[in-house]
Image 1 (tube, one colour):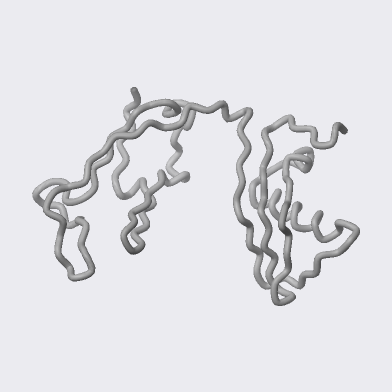
Image 2 (tube, rainbow, N blue to C red; image 1 turned 60 degrees about the vertical axis):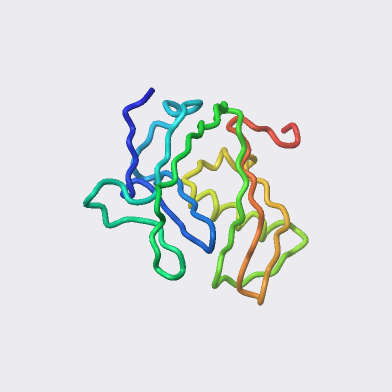
Length: 153
């Protein structure tokens, strides 16, 4: 096991409609490899007699019993994993060109934001690149694992 204990200060919690989502705040310095494959328990609601936190319905009624469940972090090899996300860049003059100049500019911006080296260029794959209203770029980014050699060279 680990000695990690995450409270509301270490979690990013989003409540929308009938859904509660949460994730560990990536800025707190969790050793991801130490928690891979480990089980964890979740309790949501009023924790402790002095707690001001709780879950309320739209009428302000608190839930009677806390929500409790257990999960397990995925056990994956991060050196072989890829990641995909939607990237939106606003307030930039844009047009999707034929010679990939614009695509290369967007890749450079993503690499800068992610703190990647220029040698990592081939790890970034952009799909569904589009320009909206001549000033907003939206694309799906796939970040391939380190050491990826797309296209064989």
